[in-house]
Image (cartoon, rainbow, N blue to C red):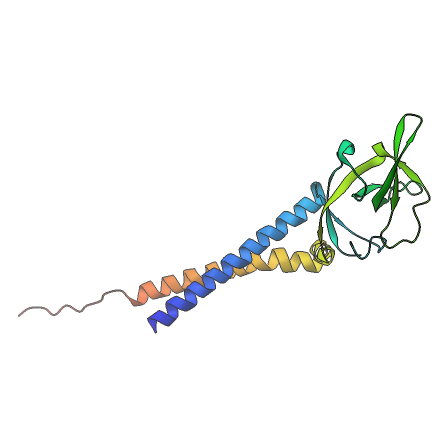
Length: 184
């Protein structure tokens, strides 16, 4: 019985540790997404099948001198500056002493109708995480926050309360008691 009790206690302890590690990881992702995230959620299939909608991509700063044909880059949409476009470089053009980039989405049949000044390319895709955008969007939502942040801390709190209760009552039950019999 004592062996089973120890095993269950260890299993519960390890479960709480795993949940806490997950909660810390989720908190880090939530904070990073709000402050300095290199992760971007892809919306659209213009880069399919290489990069699909709801994939997450890690965008590193573009070292413009090292960009080459075939790199997937991110730049501001010339027609809607608040939007970013992620397309593949298919060529470079020199005009009036400036370098321009021709781009195209992998799923598009034609080249983009504009060329981008090289200095407007702000990022290069260095890693793709398939379908991770679903998880990131979930973390940003209220149910995701509750599931990934509040619940693990509630489980930890409950674990600590139960552990204290068990330790208190087990120490009370194991006290040595005796009755004194007066000597004659």
